[in-house]
Image 1: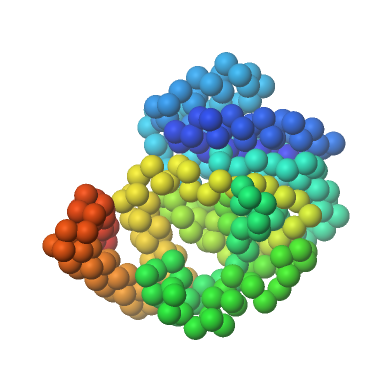
Image 2: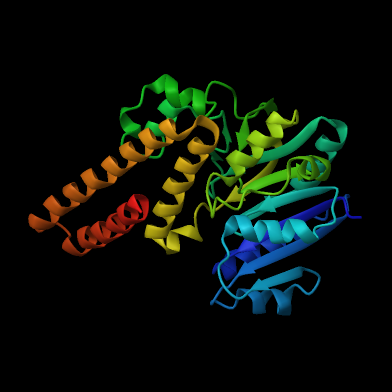
Length: 306
């Protein structure tokens, strides 16, 4: 049994995946390692690249895009490691990060999840640790209302009241790089496939926490994250999945009333922005861009009112 299974779900980011795999294999951790790539029907030659350049990697090639969550569960089903690291293909492991994460978890048997410090490509710290969102948080965070949010609200949510370089217990860590203990996974189950993508790691960490496991942010382990390179290829779908997953999470943990309020506010946001973009189009300001945004927002609205 390997110490760590590194699980990478890929969709049409072949060159970034290559860099990610090189960084994982170059890290040469003292712990034993297996690497699993689940390719979600890429059309850019990603699967062929893995077969040709990384024969030591276990490749699962799906015929179509099954979604981030379902594909991760495919990998979880075959992973043999004592720990499983969900790792985005647009990441690069820095130095001995993998070894540090495993060593920390081995030394703290009550820890179910470890999240490394994520870095932007320029070396600055990327936000990756969170407290659980309240309905008030959700009404502002990642919406057009975010600039008007009370400062204390988002400071609390993003844990900006604690140093970036401090090892700390948190409510959840983002899924770009998330290591889970096999024993904990066997207790709480796999990722909830009701989340096609987005909020699945929030839900998973909440289940770990409710089962009594600690979730720890470990800044001594570092991973570079080129954020959103897969999902930015399909902007309307990204909006749809992000918002519907957010609403699903609140329905699951806060009930239908909270989910209904959130859905209404989010729909209002998109309808308002469609009006803003339409006004700019009428004024002749970057009409192609305005038309593209209106089409994207219309798709989101249609998906959310079904």
